Length: 291
Length: 254
Image (cartoon, rainbow over all chains, first blue to last red; front, top):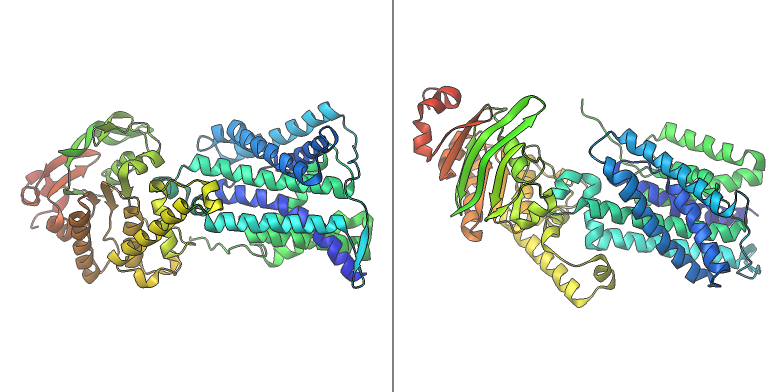
């Protein structure tokens, strides 16, 4: 029973982690909380649904299609709503712009699809099997494996490639990076693309897992993923992964052993506790300000 | 031939005129010193040359090409490298990675090529590694390549900044107070290093520095700034004996 709940928690948590990565990477480089990120995730879920129902693609093709679409959407949002403000006005303006984009995107989807919940068609036979005494569904395995692969891919990208090196440099000193010949705008654009693709993957998998998508699903998921990013230490990529998984497990344990009606309250209460004890987050760097 | 030419450059911040109609020519392969009291506009000059600021007035020509309004990264890729007065290394990257980031502007491989690990990309990456190691050897940091940059001593960090700027394979290297915080022995080494870099790579160096001994020793030409204006220019000997310079900056008895 307990192990099953851990598995449920990991499944949910890995989707939080996928979204949290986008928050943390963008914050790491431009110090912006991209509040439209939850809506990118929602668009990912809907694009996946469209590809499955209208074009009859399988789950993996739909996942890839949604990721590519959201990559472009994320870059477009950055280009239109954030870049014109960068360096010219305060960070607060970009934050307000992000909230604006968030409302625009969710309302746009509500206009296109109506505000109600749409169901995903059944894509994976709901068969479950036993690993020892633990009941596992095929879908859970798919979500865990896909998330793990994406996160490993991201780590390789950040650690091994030239653009990953540029991303790490920009996250430490954006001006010095530009003086080293790094095209900072391109790096930022790329960061939005990667973060959005991961969120889209999360959106499609959550849509299938809970068998429901709706235009406002990005709000709560975005908020929780943001919390997960903060829990892990905002700006830290491993932190977002750990934070996402932790939050997922906490939430499921709260539902299983306490009360399902308070699941969000429990998750956030624990988040607050952790941050009181470790303000920099689980994996965050302690910043000692010079006075 | 002049590698860098500043024509009537002025820079205003609000009402403050940080640079006032500055004309300057730096000849190829010179070590060119810029001195002056604090607030004279020396670092502002570096920021204009590297594209951090767009000058309010005037023209900037590098190797015959107009630089005005080019973004900083493009100017860097044309071959202008720099270090910073207040050291700006990537603290959380290793010493080696700091230098590798410096080579970003001169490598070409794209993200997809990197992920695929194509032979050409791997070759380029090996070359970057080899070049970076060579630069670290040059500045005497080859034994610390896996340290975090933040764990280096002050003098080492200044040398690492030079190595990082050199990774860009610049034709023009700007050093902003390279000797600040160094002890006498380190300054001696630094002078040798600067000369060596110039002679081996045939590049041009402009340095801003307060240490008169260092400036007078290694610079072929010197420009003196005060309140945003160039008040004198010449060889070290001419500068030492210039009345106006002595009055406003060097003081009597130097």
